[in-house]
Length: 400
Image 1: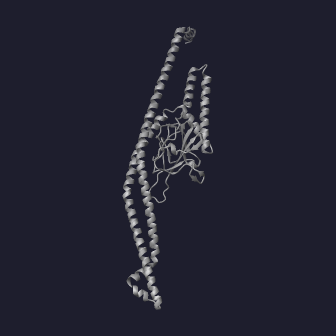
Image 2: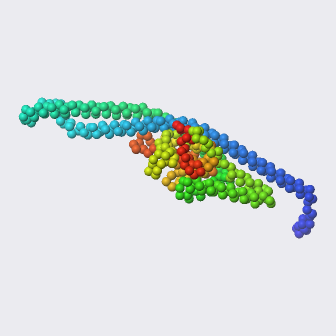
Image 3: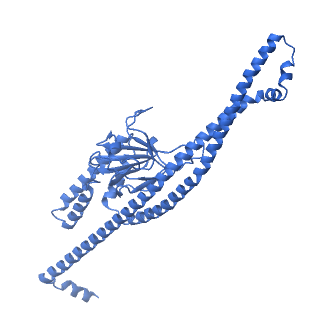
């Protein structure tokens, strides 16, 4: 054993040519591994893009079903409200007439006897006839109004019954398409989990830091500050590794490029080209008076369990509960522009995830159009440029 060790220790080093060949083989292997990794990354990116495009198409079909559901829900809710109001008026009229029913019945059976039941002077008897005439006219009007109210109630109930199959069909179609979309989202989530990059990790750190902020503007400011700090750190790593560690420098440059890559192209000009984030209608406009002052965004009233989509291409910068906003999502569209979405029931996108316009990111709460006083959910939408709110309406397509 000792002799073998001594012989190995005394063995001369390989010739320089062999050392060079070994180094070249190692370098070739590294390059091949890098090329293979690049091909895998490209294939993964292509797969993510394909899946995202499929989700956008499925969400667009679902939007059509939700537009139909919005119309059916609004009609049913309106009919139900009118039916209940008519029912309330009918009950009130019936209550007003209830004390007069004995007199009405007696007058209808014994008009003369009722008038002469109590002896009165002739002039009072005449006045009694006049009063009974006026009372009879009033009772006729009340009866006519009561009949009209009953007829309206019957008509509204018939219209409501006729509208219910349309509502049920719209709900069924929404459920069918939403189920298909949920399956695509789950598949996409698994693919993305296997292909996370440094930009995703940086975005998560920035979101965690931003959650400590006091207000919405501070949230966006912290996200931007952390992103710039991460870029600076990656640039310093690349510069420090450059002279003596080429491979480490290349990796650092890759991280730097990933972090410096824009989240998106921005929102462009206000030409109504961006996808509306949810089906439904705007019930509060930008600048409209509220208890907290002029509104700095739009409020959409959505159909039950409507799907929320990204208005722009970009990256999810924040996705978590925040203060009084409830579930809050911020999409970095690039160019210093951010879309803020709040009021969601569920968030389906993750911090750091890249998005295409129209890609689903969450779902709104459900509500029952037949339930009296049912709270209709609102999606609050802000568009901020360099942290300052601007009116989103000119940028968004109307009518869902």
